[in-house]
Image (cartoon, rainbow, N blue to C red; front, side):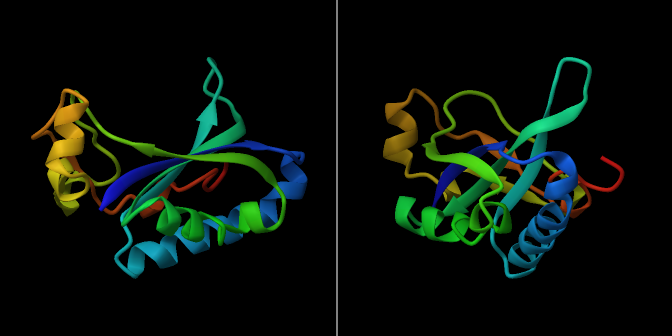
Length: 141
């Protein structure tokens, strides 16, 4: 497995996005229930205000599998966002996302040791938990 990041910027005003954002939240929650390692969140400005777009981090077998998955995102399928998908190889540090009590996922489980070592990293632990309560824009945001 490897890491992938989807970045996106909104193409529509927030009121026109709301139904699609709710569908996006449900889509991510369903994937998590199926065992897909995925988390989604929104980007904010310097004052902490949302509205510019979002970021999705996921694990997939390869780029083609990651792309096939993100093309199912209701935000993409409904033309709500401009987006980009990139592979990501963690090289230094660690990452904590969601509810840390739910468990840890080692970077080595997702990227080949050779790939990580080539980028100057290796052996980091990336805690990954439930996190379902904060996907995308979320309640009230």
